[in-house]
Image 1: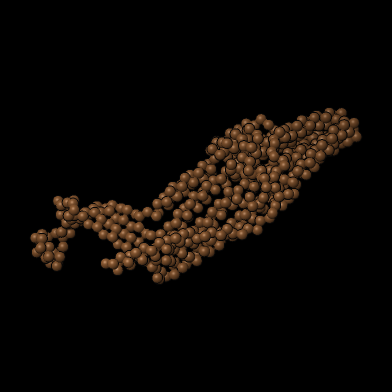
Image 2: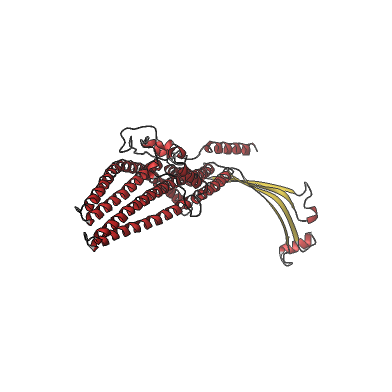
Length: 470
């Protein structure tokens, strides 16, 4: 008896010594990050991405649209449901270390053959041709977490929950940026429509003047036709812009989770304001702030735990099972206590030996998957740095383009005035007037487009730096 006790104590100590094995240590992959972003003069630790979206976007109309989008956008709502689902799985994972307990009640009547040994024995000893068995018992099964398998399973659930949380933040940054982009695009279309209507007035005046000159014999019918075509072209443009405005309003309504409808707006694109002197912060800080990059790192952490599970499956498993309750071969004394009580406990140590190389394959596959996720994490970081660099170079280039486009518009507007004066004085023909008006129209439309692109590049930079989810 003493020897059995010593063996049992030794076994418990052995379990205690190896039960310290937990999840695999995680070594963060080395990242080749630049000291500062390209196209920035200095490495500033502050970043515009730390601003809440309500501070970054000051337009009350846009703020209202974003607020609606965050509350009602269906992609965001689906993501939040996924978070709730993962949270339930995380709660369940906390109970993996506890034993499984069940309760079962059964009754059985068996009638063996009279010519069988069981049948003859029943008739001889019990004086009956059948046997009854009634059982009510609790069953318990528990596996000791010797190698940290259960801890790693819990860690997998935790990483999956955090991934859904980061995914929700990533979707919010995209929704916020998409609403802002759509809103600025709508303001651009409004401006272009205003420009086109103003140009239509010029075309109408030119056509009226050309008709008078034709009637007085100072020009040909071709001039009237050209002026008419110019006016018709502008009318066509107005119709197209009105169509695009309606489509953009519908798209914005859907983004904020509403049926297609008009979008009220009280300002023009020239009245919009966004931070101009944007500080980007350090690349290392951007990596920890961007939800999509953080999500990819959590995938890597999950795969690290999966390697730990695959390793643990190759080691011995200690399982303890127990059951106890009441049992009787007669219904009338089934619950007589303590006569009907029974119980048993079984402990076993199982070591897998030959599994057709399944366990080794699972471990190798888990390690390869971890290596793939290391590469995917590095790629996500590289993509993030690239997006910031793209937004920076676009913003700087569009500053220059906006200045040049503004100068071009001023020049061509003066050209229209000169052409009209010369045309009235007979020193220029109708083609010069039409050309001047057409060039001015295109230049003004282009300026509106460049301004919208400039606003979009600032929004892109804000999102690329990890802003929009706060």
